[in-house]
Image 1 (cartoon, rainbow, N blue to C red):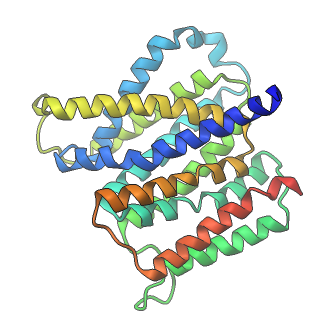
Image 2 (image 1 turned 90 degrees about the vertical axis):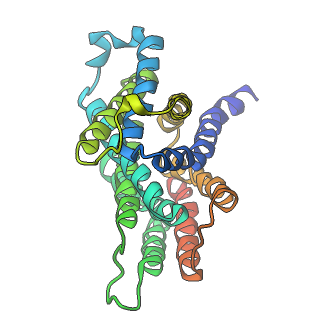
Length: 294
């Protein structure tokens, strides 16, 4: 009984992470409305998480720990999660949240490819179904009567697709990196998002200096940073323990949470064609949970 509960912990952690991810877009939307752009908000909130992590996990910062077993994986994990997080934030702050998230959750398609190349997770017949259904779903969502080929038609669409690719690859690398602790991988993630966010924010105008940000906005940034800290620990723990193709399916619960939140908090809508394409993508993700069982 204890073994069953122990095996359930990583999946519960991922489920909690999915709930948080499904709501995380909203504070970034609020910050965008007070002229704190996405990259700047991401850099500040992840810097808060990083500083908190440096204080609590200082024992994990020994040089010997950093260079244990393939240290280059930490670099790539940080960079890829930084890019994925930035694409997610830019997508949901500038586009239709559910459309961006559904395109982001083409991640199972990319996970299949990366897991096969990097983890040698064998692709079964279900894997080919996932690929076919995912591609059909995205073609349905992106097809426009004025276009002969279904390609993203907006900046936020491109961010959703790019975020899904980098998110999938980072998940596989986190699973592959069994030589570093969850704390170290979390620190790498926070640092990666801070650096990517700062780099991107240099190319985006700020309507006011950081010193002019209101107390309410700083409190929102602080609260979001604390949420990011908790989110990263839960997701890192889950991804380290659960096969990549199964983890991405558990994280799909984010879509349910996001759909409810979008309905309650915004006036955004999607067309029937977009919902049909999205349903295909979700179905493909559900099929991917069985790929490691054959």
